[in-house]
Length: 195
Image (tube, rainbow, N blue to C red; front, side, top):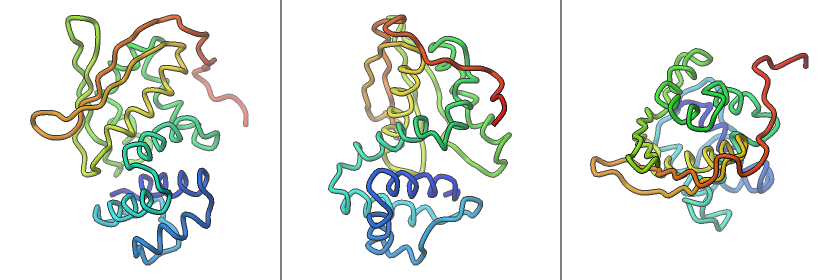
């Protein structure tokens, strides 16, 4: 697993529950390190141990923890780049959904050895959507749900999200748009502007 993914888990636990909680997670998971390095690659089993330990130490259900991680990835101010990467997908929420197929390729432009799960979008006859994803991380669909929930809010769209399991394995996140103009969307400029 790429270090950026592991660092995201560490940052979320540290920010949401405190650095002392992350230290307990790392000790219980026997990670053998104080923190992950963003540009290193780790064995998938290490990531799995960190997630199991995080759920145990925080007392949170794994699905809830992963969905909150997805929310964190696009709402934490210091991770604004992730939100910007997703917003480049389109002006409307549906355009953003249709751009999920190339998200992994866009991420590789920034970090060439980052392997994100491939996402396949299907639009259903009733206007709802299904996103299929397969990954080494059990429960990644919940991370995707957290991301989508924040992005829908970002666009001012009211959605209903449901998590399921695909026939061929992996996860399916079903998206039903209830109201396209539920609220005023968050302002977004293509240029990041001066820092």
